[in-house]
Image 1: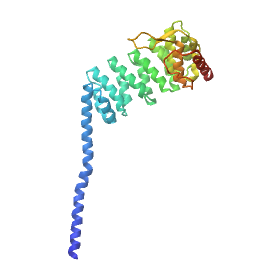
Image 2: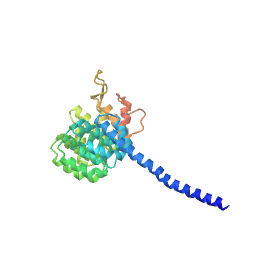
Image 3: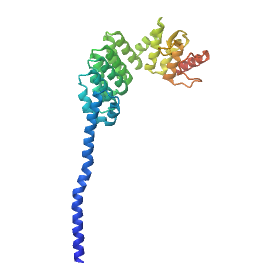
Length: 295
């Protein structure tokens, strides 16, 4: 009996020792392997971006924050096309430094890189980005960037930003960038900016009226759609809905206005207001009743 006990004791000690060796090895191996794989994936990501391989976006999305060291490095790559591809990957990775890197790309010397950063920021900019965006709106050398950033600030939707945009409107020398500051203010409910938009709707130039009607999608205020009531009676042919290689097929300003009302107010209509077509008189009258009810 004593021998059996000694044997059992020996076996238990032996098993404990073996497990003491194996468990750290087993538990440690996956972490090391994952780290190795992550490093390899980051290297593959860098190679794909440099090669301008579209599959880099999916890999950046997979790596997330782990992609950021590579993305930060490639932001200084000498090839502008690589930097442009890198901006797209930054947006897809959605790491904690995403907006910081996108805002930095607004200063890139290449217009395509700057434009890519603008497109990404339309999707990702948030309240935490406001201060850095205001700096860009005030100091960026490219008037296109200054204007688009003003629109992005308006989209973020902090009414406290109105004073900054008002100051930009007062000093912005580029006409288009200045107009975008007005548009951003209109979205934020600024009375003077809203009046500027109403005046533009009465322009003698049909294309100018079309541009203004479509800008009400950005303003995105159902109550402001009453401003478009005169446009619902404007039968001027203004917009070609056919592709460039096909014979023109024009719709009227009133038809485009129906599309804008449908998109902003999302009313329950007896027809599809989002369809690009020439609407019937009774359909136009229905939309007039909608905007009158919204004011």
